[in-house]
Length: 209
Ligand code: SF4
Image (cartoon, rainbow, N blue to C red; front, side, top):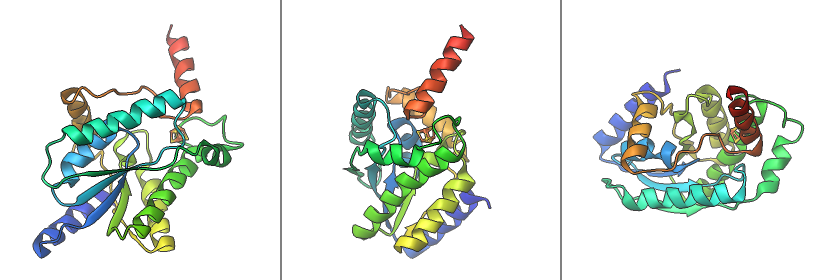
């Protein structure tokens, strides 16, 4: 499925109908959200939902959330962007990662990590009467867009709120996120987020040395 084409069609339809739906956008970090916000804020009334109990250590979590808020404050966009922070409930992440700690990024642990964060977003979207929910995660070349959309659609059916299908790396989304990160002077981390991805990145650096 070409998720970007599907999104293009949906946006075209919304434009024709003169609608600006409310979107709860789960964000993993400011750099990944930059392009998604620049793009989707033309068509949606967005609330950024920062729910990332996977992030290690806590100082990194604080750094990323502050960076996210700063970006929202700085961005010049068509429709104003609101911000909502979830809980930093790390135990929930450790529960889903149990037994999968040894895996590299991109495997089963990551699929469970997507699901943890998207399930929280779906429930918050339902409670807050949002029209759609989605995530910035598909912008990363390291993330599996098929899996993200599959999980998003399942959660949409489970919680009764629409999932905005997407693959934000298309249309040069990832490239644009790097340009915007430079433009806004954003901190760009060099590991995905959890302590296992941190461990693997450290190993890679040592091997290079
Ligand atoms: S590597 Fe990233 S997506 Fe995978 S479990 Fe860790 S934080 Fe989650």
